[in-house]
Length: 113
Length: 113
Image (tube, rainbow over all chains, first blue to last red):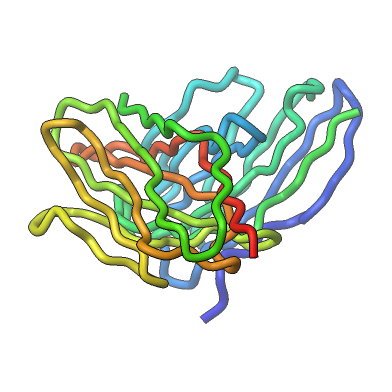
């Protein structure tokens, strides 16, 4: 069974640009969560989607948005990038919403110059 | 919303030493508790979880954790660490009311051979 796949794995952007990250969950998983990981801050919750609906949203500005498609794949978008957005963005899937265990991808490492 | 505190930022031990990593959470209701591990260059993976029942939970690779409800704690332990336990450890909590999963800042464990 394939794991959670995130693309791209690495990317470099400049301030003011926007970026879209993609996540394909494990087959059969309908819930996708996104986290931002930075040194010293751990994982900060961004959003959780289930069946194309956003269930929960973390404390991030409106520049951060996401969506989920009917095949459970998810994308997140960050507009007007800032230097502080440099981080590892992790996607995790689970079979149902508010499930026990999350299955993580390897992440998309974003560097903003 | 729930929050998680991990007391130790970086722990350095010699092989065969005993390990205890602290985790406290803040949430008023019933919770599910988790420890995840991130080995160098790898994705986050579940170490152990607590939903209900016996407060002493055993996980993979000889790790265990004890849920103490009165202290809002879920500390991770291992009697004798190995060099291969070098990793970053994250405590996480999910409130039992359809909440998202929140993570602590992580504890980096370095085991010297």
